[in-house]
Image 1 (cartoon, rainbow, N blue to C red):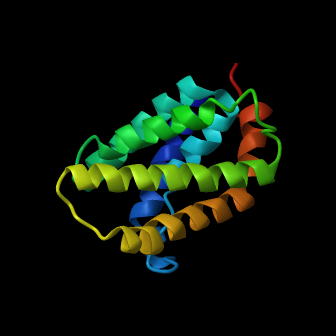
Image 2: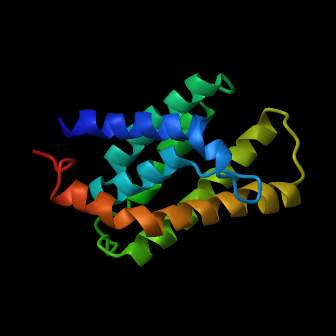
Length: 164
């Protein structure tokens, strides 16, 4: 049952990214809600769950957009795995910790996406990529972590997302 609820959260995140988030752009970028969910879940459940749900969320994003199928799946799976490695070492109850992790993980994910796009022959000046996409998205995702991590962590540990 928790997996179905988490799947519904990912579906909602994808829906919001495709609709509402287009209207709440800041500095020309919108948040990566799927990545935020992957980060939150990986912090609570570890590298295996982070990689699995990162792959599922990223692949679904790829299929929905139709561009470079597998790119988001790979990036989000690696990011989820990396964040999950800190599951036992980090103070997961702290919103400040989650915010810092969300910021760093988004920087990693966006930089990796940039590098993979370069290998596909898509040339974007590094300065533009950093200042117009990578940094703004990481700040946006960190702000969302401040707002929503505490509630999500409660659901993961004591609420309806708790493993049975």
